[in-house]
Structure formats: C-alpha cells, structure tokens
Length: 78
Image 1 (tube, rainbow, N blue to C red):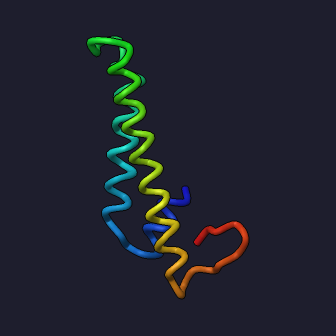
Image 2: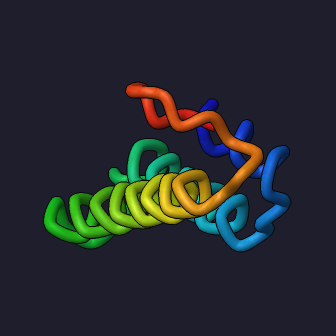
C-alpha cells in the first residue's frame, strides 16, 4: 500500500515496475515451486522477489524523504 501511495504522489514508474516484478517472482515461487528443479531454486526465486520488493520500498522511502509534498512524520509514509 505504501508503494502505491508513493507512486501516486511521485509518479516514479520504476518503483511500480520493481514492485510488480518482485510480486511476480514471489507468486511464481509460491505457485510454481513444485515444478522448479530443486527446493533451492524455489527459495532463490522467492528471495529474488523479496529483494526486489525491499528495493522498491527503499527507493520509495528515499523519494518521500526528498519530497516537499510528503509529510515527514515519525511514520515515514508519504
């Protein structure tokens, strides 16, 4: 939810793209994990998605801190 709100405020498509790609990897690991060659590859796919989501959230947080339109409360949410 924070990423979508940040996208609406800042309009940075790369953040939305990273979020979608990260969710795609996480869902792929969850739903197609049994079809992957090994448990390790399932973990790798899921972890890749998680890292992409973390990167998107961190980028969004960085834009919010540098933005004059965002309120800089203790919560750190735009």
